[in-house]
Length: 489
Image (spheres, rainbow, N blue to C red):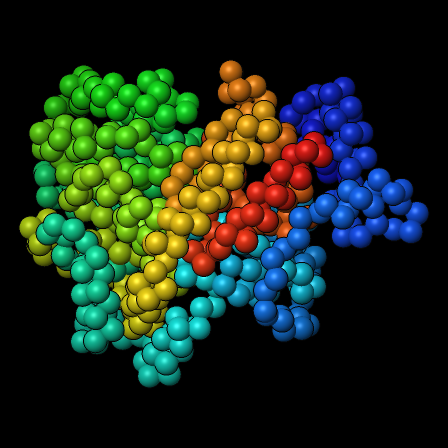
């Protein structure tokens, strides 16, 4: 309770925090128990009866006898870097996962609505993917591309078959940051230009190079970012031009005309910004911008690290929602369902620029990761996960938008498929970020059994991006729990 009071004081000031905390304290029995005590009033019992319940799930976690959360946390603080952050006032010790659910050290089940930061695409410990990884591990774990192995070739062929146009050459790496670093280098080598353009509010990685592309001060260290320019973000909710793609595109043209030599190496964008708070770009923006960038001698890069592999429901790739074909596509996270795997896909012509020197990645295309990645593609197709994301996502968005009509704190509901953002505000007209309230609701949702993500510069956006096996019962539970939690603020 002291921690809740500290959060509110920091954001609201002491007087307001004390009043809000008293109200919050009165609701604690509703959030920290699943059944009323014998001394509870009948009204409290009725309220507890209305607590949303996790959908049934046929899986019993193994008994856990390992170190407890407090022990792990102390060891982590002692031996791991101080830059590491954790969710929740009392960090969770997650010890097992199965499909869309996670289990803590006490065997408590949680609905995972964030998928390991949009990484677990097919489900935790999906049996077909586990089998592919295990069987390959028994034969050969590592050899590098200096020798032949069918797994990397089979995986590259399958991945290339998912790409439009002439995007047929694949480079495998280990993460999204690596993929975007390689894409940026390819753009500069191919065009002979240095200047890169990205959007404000973007996140493209945490390496020294990709931090330049990233445009959120919460992630950026004060180091040189090179020849990188950040243009106005085409955010339909908060953007200065609303949903007017033409005016945002004109801003980019002006930036090329007045802020560069007139020539650029490339432009990179997420179709739905991830860490920035699930912001979908204004309709038609990429088509306009791709034309402008190509006329300035640059190439166009689509960052599909979070939006790829059918998550948006309407399309396999996020960029397809804007009716464009990029010159380079980067991907990671969902490509491996938790494996350290990323890829860059481009045209043969652009790929050829790397042949002038030795380009090598020790772990890129590792046999185990390739076998697992190929299994991911197979599962997505066999289980029709793209169509599933469209169906369940439509249901989730419909229910969330209905909830928005009930609660003033919900300023915006946005996204596609199972890539959804809920932006919380204290004033709908001013769109004032509800930072303190978001922090309280974040904890309350955990107590109710739901793990969500947070995003946006002010941390006031709930990111709902679960494993793609998340179903309508899960969606209903999530919305009911959010409704319940908000009503107790």
